[in-house]
Length: 336
Image 1: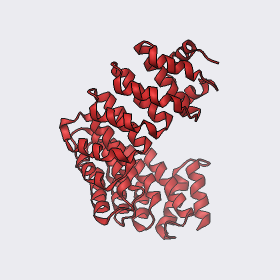
Image 2 (image 1 turned 90 degrees about the horizontal axis):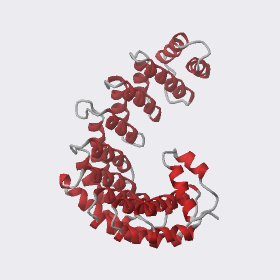
Image 3 (image 1 turned 60 degrees about the vertical axis):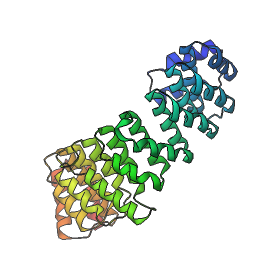
Image 4 (image 1 turned 30 degrees about the vertical axis):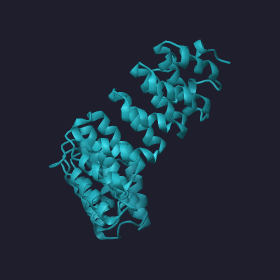
């Protein structure tokens, strides 16, 4: 059984590794009693390290550690070191125990450090604590009087909790002056595109379309988040908006993503955009268009028209013989 000192040495070893690498390095068992003792009696750095390690162990090994919830909750409420409180909040999410919700709500409402509030907000969203929605909506409604990183965390969590009362503040946050807030709000609005009252779905759709426009949103990452959100839309106008991005966005990575997103839609609009994208100035966009067009043909999502046949024949000439795109074009052509 690992000793408390061994636990701390292990945490030091794990820092800086990827999540998969951390999982591989974690032992099958951990001295939970020793870790809890360190949470209560250790120095600040030891408390922070132990909270992090408990969270990693529970999350990556899929272990339930109910006895750690109370000491971590106490740390989150009363520890004098904000780093310890941050690690405690994040560990409480990783433990996956909703008994932690009261301490996380207390931290979101009362902690004086934005980083602690941010971790608490994200933990509440990831735990699916619906009781936190009114507080999150109230905080996000305060706009720029709330720090940007906390606004972003609130917008992200309200997308996970998905509640009608959150839609209005997310629509406002999608216009926030801070890019990180807009990014999280646009991602979250995608969850309001189905199974909601028509007015909410309509407003969410219109805002996402605005966020896809380079004239209105200059940050390519946010336009890409809007494209990803659009994938689940049933609105008949969605294909038009995605097709416009596939052929007109100034950023090649965004055009490539839009081309790939067109696989979610069928019909003449997607077909036309994919054929046009085969002429894109960027090689990677052209490759994506070729792959998606061939896949769409094989799935029966585009019509057997002369222009599609011509495009597939062009792909066989355009891409190197034996390449993935060349093979897909040949298979699609044979399926017509």
